[in-house]
Every structure is written in C-alpha cells, then in structure tokens.
Image (cartoon, rainbow, N blue to C red; front, top):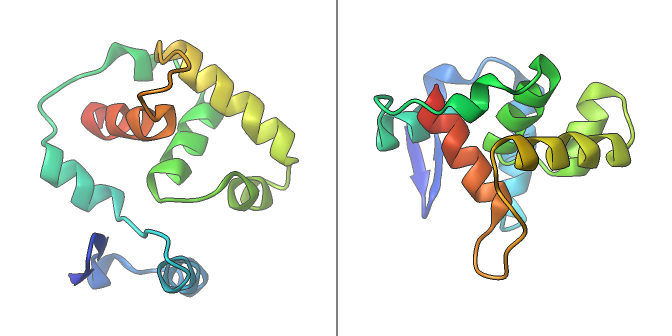
Length: 119
C-alpha cells in the first residue's frame, strides 16, 4: 500500500493503467485517490444501509466512482454521458439516501461513506 498524506492506493489492486495514471494525476494536482476497499476496511463492513439497496445499478456505479474520488466530469466521460446526466444521478442518490442539502455537511462525502458502510 502506498500512502502520501491521506492518499491510499493498494498496488496489488492496480489493474487498469489508465485508472492508475488518472489517480496519480489527481494526487499530483492536490486531489485524492482512495481505494474503496481500503476505506471499507477502515470503516468496517458490519453496518448495513438499506438506502443503498434502493439505488439503481447505474446509481450504484456512479456512487462507486464517487468513492474512487472521481469528479462529475470524469464520471460523465467514463459513461459517455453529459455532466448534467451525472448530476441527475447524484441528485437521485442524495434523495434515496435521505441526504438533504446542508450548510454544515458535505453530501457527496456522506453518500460515499454510506456506500462503503453498505458494501
């Protein structure tokens, strides 16, 4: 496992070179690259979240990419859709997970945490 600050990647889980280069670029630009499996291990897998079960397969795919630290633009590119389509999926995710807009909470982070708890 490589650790730089809060950036975690498991080398043995790097399968796709393009994904790896993308993660390196995000970290080099001050972003974050998290291996969802590492975060799942950190938070434990014992908790279940029924809200995740209500997500469509596409919403789960979007949420999984969010958990990898992908931007809306990167998610749109990987699915060959518009950023607006990704925004709609994310809005649906927030609604199904009952994450209302808030000045004190970051809904994207909360959604990813629920996803990782429910895995």
